[in-house]
Length: 135
Image 1 (cartoon, helix red, strand yellow):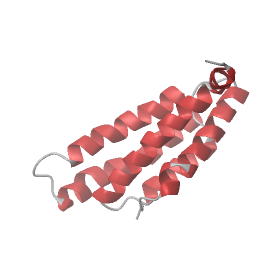
Image 2 (image 1 turned 135 degrees about the horizontal axis):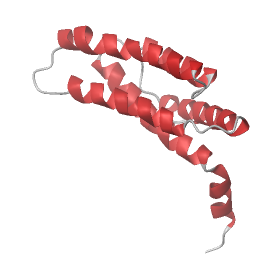
Image 3 (image 1 turned 90 degrees about the horizontal axis):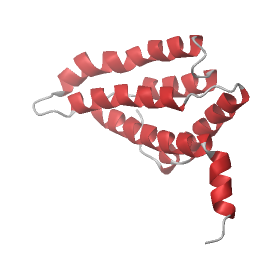
Image 4 (image 1 turned 180 degrees about the horizontal axis):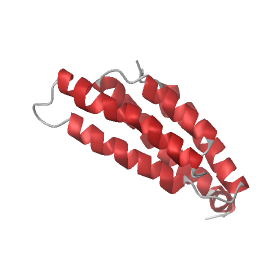
């Protein structure tokens, strides 16, 4: 079960995003595009799960297996050096908690927060310059 909590939408995604972007900067590899790509894949499944007439059984039979399949995609991207182990492990941990549509809705909110923090930390130097300007 993936409970909707303040930490799920703030602390956890920020921590993951900072670690991923720090590692990407250290290795001089951008991974925010790949993180966004995973979100797009999840969002497609999310839209399908929310269409009219989609049942609990449909979710279990059609969507949950594809959500679980994302772990293979994460492993592939990590193997190619596009994402880092911490990111893979954290997303897999969240994916493993998805049991129903409400869990998936909470995961999508978590991932939206993750994308926001990823973009922030990707452009951290620019953000620091912005903070220091006087308007």
